[in-house]
Amino acid sequence: MIVRLAEIEVYPEHLQEYLKFAGEVDRLSVEREPGVVCLFPMQSTEDSTQIRILEIYASEEAYQSHIKTEHFLKYKQGTLHMVKSLRLPAMKPLAPETMKLIFNKQR
Image (cartoon, rainbow, N blue to C red):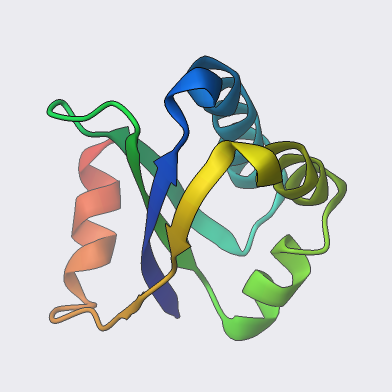
């Protein structure tokens, strides 16, 4: 499993357009790709240009497949000029067995 918390800063003048791109790619990825467990975008309440996306992929193969999809490439190419900074630190789940409980609560 791959877990990341993408840290994105968007130029203020492109914020609304970026949010549309991000919402579309996240929705399509979760709907269409079985290996995309979670793409959960969040916006800071203190600074709206600060975006965080909780990314969970079933495997490295699922992630590699994801970044080659048409909807991801559209997002990536369409938002290059909108993103001021991007960090993709890998995270280590402290209790991976809890993830199934979390997602089952939403059913």
